[in-house]
Amino acid sequence: MTTPKLLPCPFCGGRPIRSQIGESWPTHIVRCSVCGVEMLGSDKELLEDRWNNRVVKQSLTTDMEAAQ
Ligand SMILES: [Zn+2]
Image 1: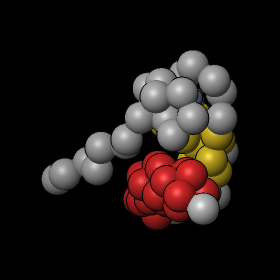
Image 2: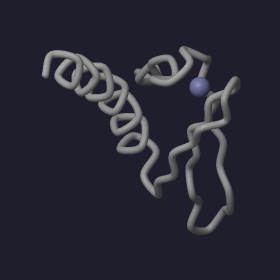
Image 3: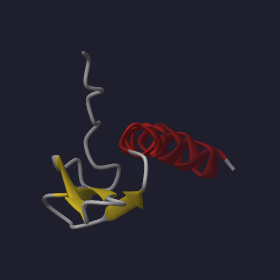
Image 4: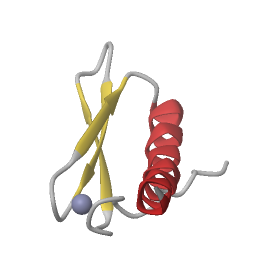
């Protein structure tokens, strides 16, 4: 069983923390331990995927904006 690793926070580079609300229909949360930015999702793996993708897209967007 492999657990996908969460990338550092795209804003401050802080370490993300996973948590969960509810039991029957849990909402999964990934939150930065430093600046507190968070992302919610009902599917844990999808949420982690979105977090990691946002990290990548965030830096790409910044590069593109800087180039214009
Ligand atoms: Zn952060």
